[in-house]
Image 1 (cartoon, rainbow, N blue to C red):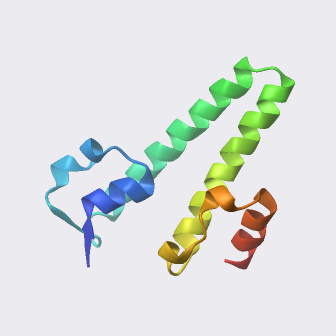
Image 2: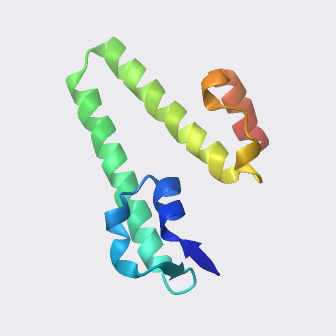
Length: 106
């Protein structure tokens, strides 16, 4: 199974330069540890960013930033869990409760 690096970078919100040295196509069976490390780095960066924002905001700002973070992660979960992501309704036109219901269904 071959995975296109451009698609992988887009889906995982990773800079393409982080995977540029791996060649034109990635063999999924041979690079599982690479994917895991990229995902772990992405998760670490996001959590550090959220933690920094929460340390420096007032209470209302903390609630707003936490909500934005949770909603973004929820949207990504829906995208990755959906059998055909291209058929999803635009996240911009969905209410938070709709996103929650869809995530629970998936």
